Length: 241
Image (cartoon, rainbow, N blue to C red; front, side, top):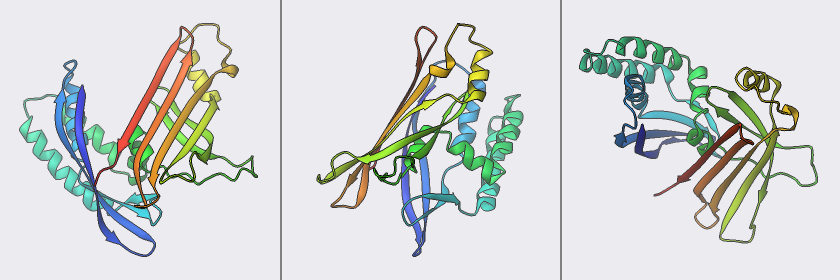
């Protein structure tokens, strides 16, 4: 399915060290590419995640979910109402139970959120690397469904430091981990020199130095093996007032 939605990100509370934001997600429309009851119902339970409150530090780094227990109780009430609405579905109770298991633990829920590229990039605010310390790098974990998470180690630089809108780039060319290679070997029987394979990840944050805020974030992830694997993800987040 293809889904269009808008996200609002509103300041709820502010202290010297922390910020609490309300994130809301509203579905504009959903176009089913192929009928799939499981995916359709899963998306409806996913939509019940919002609105949700999250905490960051004063720099915008993610800290955690605000009052997770209250949020979980409200989600459960809405989920039961959804079950009542779709009670003709034989699978909805099972799907709800499985989804609840993934969100009831705050740490697990947060980890799953950061497997989503848009969420991952939104909260990615890497420090600028010191060129005189070449051994220090930034890590951005990138998750590929059915394969696993790849910790991408890269360098962060400012491309145009004198401009009104600076671009902070993060660039990584990463080897595959042993666990991912072993997983891929189970399904790919081609003769591949796995130790030579790389994934590439490149991100940009466009920051307006006058308004003191991020205007846009982009990310491009690529994993290619000639005639065997062609996988890429392209993410663009445009922030509006």
